[in-house]
Length: 127
Image (cartoon, rainbow, N blue to C red):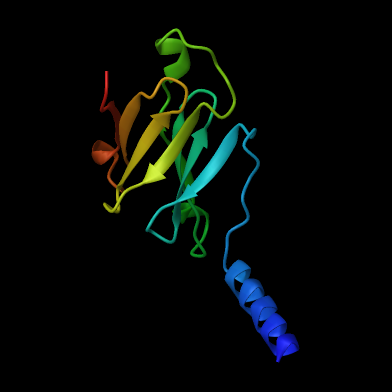
């Protein structure tokens, strides 16, 4: 009975970890964040807060692109230290919105991505 319990525990642990995405180390400059759209990721420069929308496709090169959501170096704009890992993105329940957090000073920004260029932006939430 003890062997069965150990085997069951081992199988459950393996099954739980099989679907988990690999995690990146904390000290990486760039990270990709999945969106609820299976074709779209957000690429974050964790040192500056710059963000790009990255879309891949199996339809061909005309459907693949990378476009700037925010080219502003938020650390420099606020006269803050540029440190790898300073900024992090957090998904929301809204398909097209994330929250960008300055993990050192606590500043927050609303990040909205969308297929339409006029509906993409990064704006401060906190002062």
